[in-house]
Image (cartoon, rainbow, N blue to C red; front, side, top):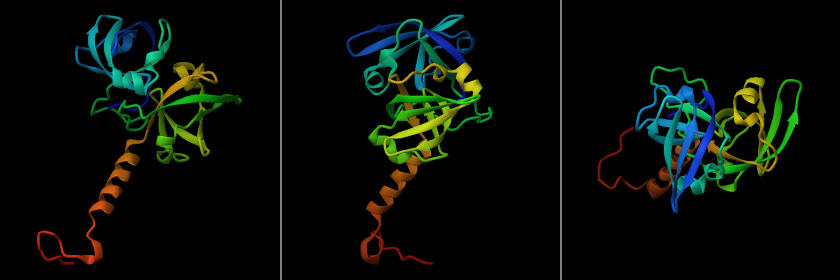
Length: 215
């Protein structure tokens, strides 16, 4: 699990693509400093497993499903990437609960500079629209952010100077793709509500096991 608080702005060293997978190597001295084989690191919001590491870089395998559902496949050498190590149970939850499981890919539509911040508008893929609410949480390329504006097929976030300086979102331009992860709590609530509707007894019928219902 992650919190969406980027620890380091890394750089892609190489992305070796195979027929149905890829191997990604990233320069990130901070997150590599205590990484071990099997550790989880979020790269632009995608949870990936370390298969090799040295003092300043780490390597991860990327399967076809991840390449298909995220913007990882478009990375090239020297591209900046947001990096975050898995959260410890004792750490503060500075952002929100982020799994590193990408729900969709959005596109930067516009950026509007402010006095000390930028308002950035992104497209909102149809399958995830119902999970996004104004003032709710969303992870963009692994950065925990608050939705500041919402339309039928778009949403906006307001980026403070720290986010502009320390993450890839400071330089994202219209037309570029980003990884989106919605709040997992919304997905669980929807699933539980759907399950409740499908299993509720019709017409006040007695429970299937014949037990008496007491108030």
